[in-house]
Length: 173
Length: 202
Image 1 (spheres, one colour):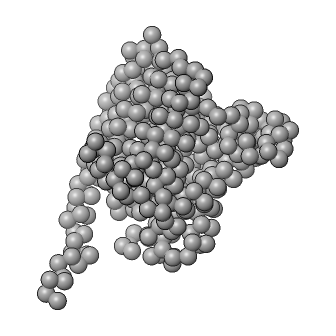
Image 2 (cartoon, rainbow over the protein chains, first blue to last red):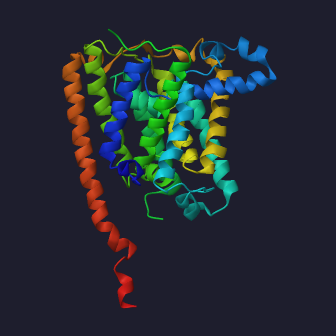
Image 3 (cartoon, each protein chain N blue to C red):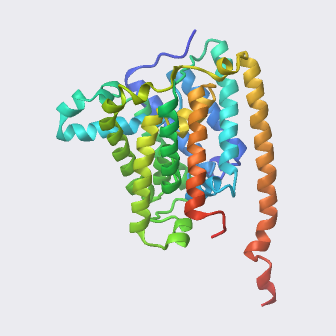
């Protein structure tokens, strides 16, 4: 129990457990740790509220139906698990703007949320075009030795590093 | 025997439980922290790199052992050079601007970061929705450029599965070892920078 209340686990413990969790997913669900398809399904549900015909006629939603499946529940679980872990260690804090962002761009929430929103849109669009994210392609695809997984992982980090260096540089804030 | 066949509500609950463990581990591993993710991308702190490489290595060996024992079925995503490359580069820009990836964004929201929820999750829904609208136009041409099917590294390298796993494991272990020495070096310098020794004389 003390272990569950720890503020952090060393990287090798967390990494080992994520690898084991992926094995568990393969065995119990015949599926792998992955998240981004859920955002397509959820977007389809939201669009359906306004125009179900549009969603029914769209080729992408036909291939990724707006339904709640194993992965959809997994994504909801991530939220609960992170909350639980933070609560147990007493590190749960409501925050509007990350400290690093505030020291670079100022404490205003509008700027952070605007840039974050743009980032989120690119993230969602890119993940669906690449057919996976850092979970599906990197944790799971690379582990299966899929060429797509290693290629996408390289792309995520090359563009991520370049953008982070342009936005923040390497210096200490 | 193969993987378990769990269906219906039990499968949904299983997904929820797996997700709770996923979020729990990510939170404990510091992988949901904006600072940690940005510092990983700024090449200042390699905690997340080491965590990811470890997870990939353990998963790789474990999943292939289970596959050999008939306990898991590999599920290789097809390689489409155009979509994998352009999509992952767009993703990378978003990754650095938001400071989270899709999974960590949901986790960060659970940890109390309202920006993860308001800008991250909302942005992800918009981005995924936009892609669904664009997809029909990409389908006939763009998504056929460099479509190589469900290929794997062993096939690409012309090596057996286990030799490839040994090679990749060795490279991952070497990378983790090297990045760890870099992190330890940075840690040893840090106290001087932040001036932790100064106040005692005041």
